Image: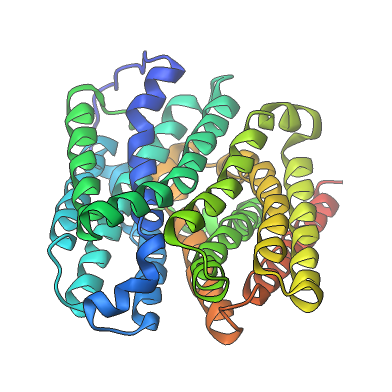
Amino acid sequence: MSYPKIPSWNYSVPASLLLMAPFDILASLAMDIYLPVVPTMPQALGTSPEVIQLTLSLYMLVLGVGQIVFGPISDIVGRRPVLLGGAALFALASFLLAGASSALLFVALRLLQAIGASAALVATFATVRDVYAERPESSVIYSLLGSLLSLVPAFGPVVGAVIADHYGWRAIFLIIGLLSIVAILNAAMRWHETRPATATTAIAIRPILASLPFWIYTTGFSAAMGAFFVFFSTAPRILIDRAGFSGITFSFIFASVALVMIVTARFAKCFVTRWGIAGSLGRGMAILLVGAVMLATGEMFLRAPLIGLILPMWIIAIGIVLATAVMANGALAAFGNTAGTAVALYFCVESLLVGVAGTLFVVLLDGNTAWPLAAYTGAAALITLAGLRQLARKTV
């Protein structure tokens, strides 16, 4: 199959962000925005808290697994059709979720929403890889995308709580659907194809999975994102059910963690320049370990949910930013001609590790305490640090 020469991407970094970021933000927003109403969802849908937790975990799993399908497809048919098709499915599922009346239908529509989000997400990051891999703006675009994504957990739950208080939880999904339509219309007019003319049409999975750097940096990505996943899976139960905070108060407390990430992200480029990719990841994992120890100490001795959970999470948030600023470049550096497949595997492995391991920690340990977060964060950070040490030995 032959491909015409693709047009150059002439947008500035700010213009690119305005075009790309909405799809990443919406994929995350669908997870974060209804956290304040999670404790009330079982009664609204006539189901159990475990089923509502399942909608969070399944979304994370399908978000990653779906990319193993859409990544290679984007290498074959292009980024644009995968992006627009996935975003359209995401919007449709969001509108239907607003009218869901049973737990089974709600779960099924969440799966469709995650499938659409996975397609849009992999197409977006494959485009970033296509456009910026050989440009000096590479580290800038990843840091800025990370900063923008930090806005979602900072303001998403607050917005969700306000919407739910005034219009009910169904309005949350209606608004997500409307925002998706706006992003789709903008992309339809401005997002041209960026798939490299030299991209392979074969699904070259084996070389990617055989790469030690890919596994180490993807495990680090899982450690960072998993820490946040376990945090938002347990935080409503700890701060609302156990500590008695209102949905609005919880949302502002939750937002403080994301604001720490936003502030830290402003210095990410300086950190990466000074410490390099491996050094930044190592320091990020070390900070995650410190946060895990603080969580365990607080749970054993303080028994004060607000201080024992949020203060250590501020520390963990710094480690998350240090790690996420470098992990994509570290994992995907060698796979320019199969960027779609590489990005898909990167997010797929991360989502599987986070969704499966993170959920197991929440279920097997007491989800009303900080123990799941402390255990997951500490274990994942130690595994990543061990991998970095092995990689350093191989490169000596």
